[in-house]
Length: 383
Image (spheres, rainbow, N blue to C red):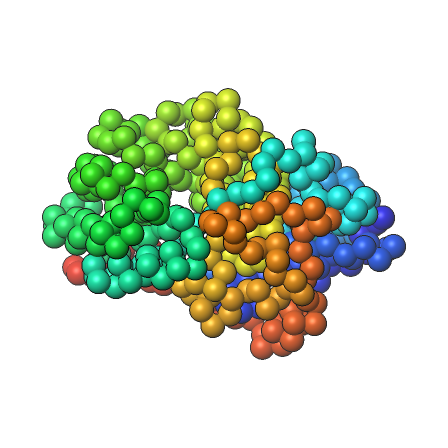
């Protein structure tokens, strides 16, 4: 079972898929993508190719160590995203070879189903209320809203009031029958984040995500003193070393490793185990495609401190391409009363429609770029 070939496909809306084939015909799929940097990650995978071809596909840990340590320079979004997608494909192959789900190799299942949430936004109270009602009708029991757009270091309370009014409208629309989480996206700085967290206490949010940028780890500890709402972060942290002080610092309640960025399935299992030792929960980040989501679910089903899974197929920027069209069978992602049920299908638990992937890739590189925002005074704003 040696790696014989690797193919890469850029597909809409902004994803990169990897197909790995062994000399005895087993095929594994991965999603090595960093949003806005598909070309860079694709080039990185191609650079890794000589280290992969001819290797036994079952040697996942050793291959990971070679890719991580073997190039001297390590870490960062591009390198670890490339490693992540390769690693996902290796687990897909191993599972198919032994006819077992990937989670069976990682301690076995700890739950029958995992709660899922999706995005629900609105630029004003009326549209926010409408959005959450629409998600409720689809069967979701939890949503996540974007809190703010451009934000200065110190900004007006009008923006805080506007956020509060949108959340209040959502609460009025669904009462306490749904959980509401809030994503600040690292757009605020700690002074205004303190104000926001204090204002949000009344709404009993499921969590507030990235109230400040993840590199400001000491600020999370300070923010913890100004509210009881659980704080989440981690989508921009890579490998267990990138999570080390974040977990031990005491300012974060939920870590959100992205399995297509942070190092893959096994690496995120290690991160989750480390977090468990510090009584920190796990809610994997996944605004990506079906292969990334399938990888996340494999982690969720074998990880005790995983409590909810993000998914965005068919929502927000995926409206014109749900991602489900890249699968032959969508039942592994079907929602039942707010949960996705555990699958016993081998590997990542999905059957990729290779013909659909190849057809979509014919359009060429998608060149999706991160939006560029500026504040009212012309200074660059966090996106």
